[in-house]
Amino acid sequence: MELADLLNPQAIRVIGSIKSKKRLFHEIAEIGGASWGIDPALAFDALQERESLGTTGVGNGVALPHARIDGLEHVCGVFLRLEHTLDYGSVDRAPVDLVFALFAPQEAGVEHLTALALVSRMLRDSALCSKLRANGDADKLFTILTAHPDTKAA
Image 1 (cartoon, rainbow, N blue to C red):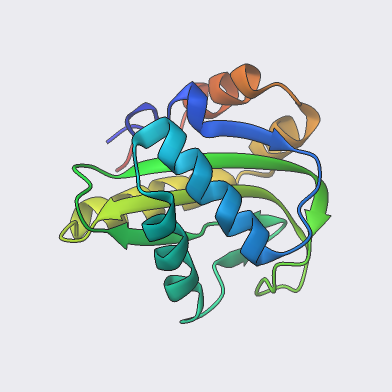
Image 2: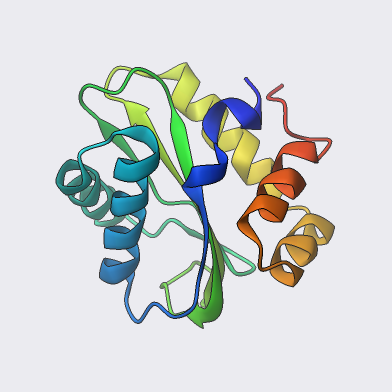
């Protein structure tokens, strides 16, 4: 699995201001609908349900919301760079400005976990996160993400 399999340029956005996690999930769901054909209502509900189990804010300004959706054929992602940080309730209590959301088929076991591990490993790279934070163009963000040396799952 490669990051380019999970992401397309239409699924990347730079967002000026999001005031709540609920609004963020709405935005992710809408982008998932526009770029992957996911039903936004299902996506939003699935993200909310998963988040109710525990925060997906992994620290250092990064959040990895994820959910399983009936009817999906493969794991797909949405990446957002927030221009203004959001209080997300992360494990380190730091606000979030980089969000990589994943949607997986309901029955995707290993594929979902592999995708989460790939994205998590990449976004632990502080140099990569600095590059992402320094760029405000979605096409450049796509290039940065897909050109990173760790874009392939182990």
